[in-house]
Structure formats: C-alpha cells, structure tokens
Length: 145
Image 1 (spheres, rainbow, N blue to C red):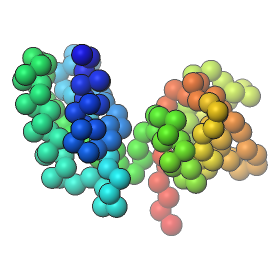
Image 2 (image 1 turned 30 degrees about the vertical axis):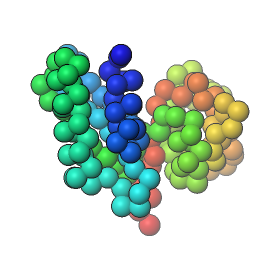
Image 3 (image 1 turned 30 degrees about the horizontal axis):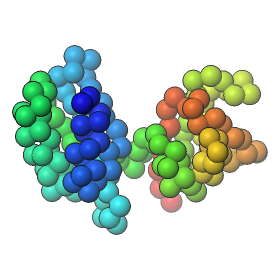
C-alpha cells in the first residue's frame, strides 16, 4: 500500500479529512494537513491523536522518516478535490493553471463551485469556467473584514 493511501485510510478512519501531504526532498519529513467538519476546526489534541496513530502505523509498516508534522490546513488552505471546490463556493480563491486559459495561468476571484469538470470563478469584470483537470494549484484567500 502506498503512503498516500495509507494516510487517507488512517486519517479518515480517525474521523478527519486528509487535506494535503507534503514530503521533504529526501522524504525525511512528512507533513500531513488535516481538517474536520466540527465548528471549532482542528486543535492540538486532534493533531496529537493523528500523530500518535500515524507514528505507530509507520513503525508497523516500516516507513522510514525523521520527522512527522500534523497541522490544520490554515485559513489559506489548499483546495484539491472537486468536492472542495463545491464546499468552498462563495469564498475567494487563487488558482494557478497548468495550461493558460485565455492567455492567463493565474486567476483570483470568488469561487462559484464545480460542476461537470468545470470550476466557476467570478472575476472583477467577468465570470470564467476553468477545467478542473487543468488546475495546478488552488488556495483559499482569507477575507479580513
């Protein structure tokens, strides 16, 4: 079983959502970003619970690492799954494309959701639809009113 599948299975089994995984260039540091549906978000106890479970799992599975970091995704969380693009509709988002759309690779605006493989985005003067499969990176942009 590969590391991502192992992490997904374990984190979801503990009642959390696996948002993202980052590995250092040599794979010595593993960063796992988790989220929760609860109103208060992720706290230190949640991170400790996931860290303890993954540390034991990595010993059993002989996964070699020096450091394991568990964190909440933060206010500027990464958006990767189609369901996330739907869940965070109405929020501001920054999107970088693999292949330019109308001569641009970078977009920032209000997320309108994701339907039929297209992500809707309201810009200052227009609305655009971007191919979900063409999105290289997407991150929420927090509003501080």
